[in-house]
Length: 588
Image 1 (cartoon, rainbow, N blue to C red):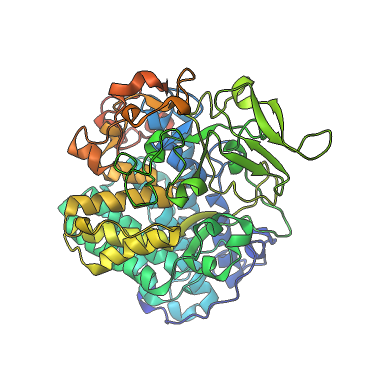
Image 2: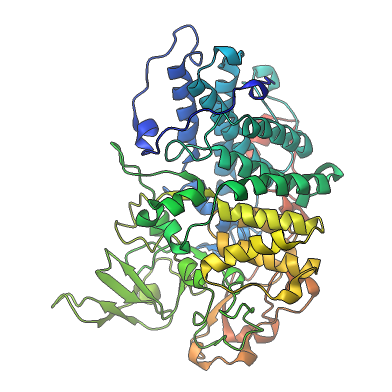
C-alpha cells in the first residue's frame, strides 16, 4: 500500500462551493496518453468516474442511500413476508442483496484502478492531484464500509485485481477495518482535503473524520478482534473532530428541502451528500415518488414501520407509554417535532405542487378531503381515496398507516423527478456517535450529555431526564432513541440495529399498524397500547410488544423471523458459483 498521505503538505486551499455539474456533468478532459491517471486531468476524470457510481439505482431509479433503512425493521417494503427487513427475503438470490453487493464492488474496483495508476511521489503532485487521490481513498473506504457492515468478512483488494486473485477467500473484517481506519486517518491528519467540500457532491475532511467514526463504531459494537474499547476510543476521537469544526443547522426541517440546503448553517452541518443540484444536465431520482400517497399521485411502496414511529417522544421528553401527553386517538399530537418531519399518518395533510394541492390522509374511508375542487379551483371537497380503493400498493393496505415525509416537504418540484440532494453524512450523526462511543466506554460526562441535548434542542425537544446521567443503560437508551428519530431514512439504521444485536426482538412479532377499521383511532384508549417493558432489552431499545392487544391492530408480515445468520447478509449465489473459496453460513 502506498503511504503517500503522511507526507502530503498540509493546508490545500479550498475552492468555492459550486454545483455538482461542475464535475459530474462536464465532458472528460484531455489526459496524459502515457498514463491515464498521471496528469491532473486524468486523475480528476478517474475520481469523477468513482463518484458517478455512488448514485447507482438500488430499485427503480432510487439510490442505495434512500433504500437502506427499509432493509431494517424500522422500514417496510410493499411486498409482505418477502423483504430483507422481515428476514424471509434474506437469501443469496435476493435481488436487493445482489444489487447492493455489485454496486459497492464496482466502486471499489474503479477506486482501486485510480489508486493503482496514480503517481507515487507526493513531490510530483499538484494540490489538486493530492485532493483527488485522497477522494479516491475515501470513496474506497466508504464502499468497503458498506460492504463490511452488511456482509462481514469479504474479499479484500487494495489494488486492481489480477486474474490470479479471482478466487481470493474472505478476509477477516478486523483486518479490513484496521486498514481503512489507518488510511482514512492519514488522509484526515494530512489536511490535504478542505474541511467543507469544495463542490456539492464531493467529500471534504469532515466526511473523512465521520467515516473513521463510522468504521470504529461498527468495529467496536461488534468487538472486531476483541478490540472493542480501542475502537470506541477511535470513534469518539474522530467524531469529536467533526463536532469541533462544524455545527448543527438552526432548523431540522431545512436539511431536507431545496431552499434549506442552500442556507449557510445547513451547509455547515452537511458533510457529504449525493448531489442532484441544478446543472447543465438535470439529474433526478424517484425517491420521493415511492414515498408518496397514491391519492396524491405517488407510488407508495416504501414505508416507515411502527418500530420507528413509537420511538418519537412526546414534547415533554417522555416515551409514549410514559407521557401523560400521549393521546392514542391522535398519536401525532404533542410529539417530538421530528415525527412530523419524518412521518405522515392518518388525518395528516399531505401537500404538493408548490402547496397548491392538498389531501387529508385516510387509511379507512373510500373518500378523503382534498383541495382544490377541480370545478372552482378552490375549496375543499370529498374525492376518491386511492390509498384505500386503488389496486396498487398503498400505505393503508401494504404499509401500516405511515408514510415517509423526510424530503417530501419540498414542494418546488415533481416528486416523480426529484433533484433534492440526499444526505449521506451530517454533523448530527457525529454528535450521537461521540455520545454512544463514550457511553460504551463508561465515560459519561458533561460533554456526552451536551452532545445529545444539543441535537434534541435543535429539534425543539427538552433536555433528557437528569436521572439518566451516570446510568449506562439509561444513557444507551436515550442515544439509541436519538439516532433513530434524528437519522431515520438516512441509511444508518440498518447498520445500527445489527450493531446493537436486537434483530431477534425487533422481528419476534408480525408488524402491527393502524387500529382495525371497527375500532379506528377514535376507539383507542391507553389500555390498548403495546407494552415496552416485556424484558429489559425491549425497554432499553424502545421495542413495543403487541401480543396482549394484537386483535385491535392491522397486521402484516405475519411470518417475520430472525436467525443468527441474518446478522450478516449472504454473498450472492452468482459470486459463490464463480469463486469456490467463498461460502455463506449454514442456512443460506
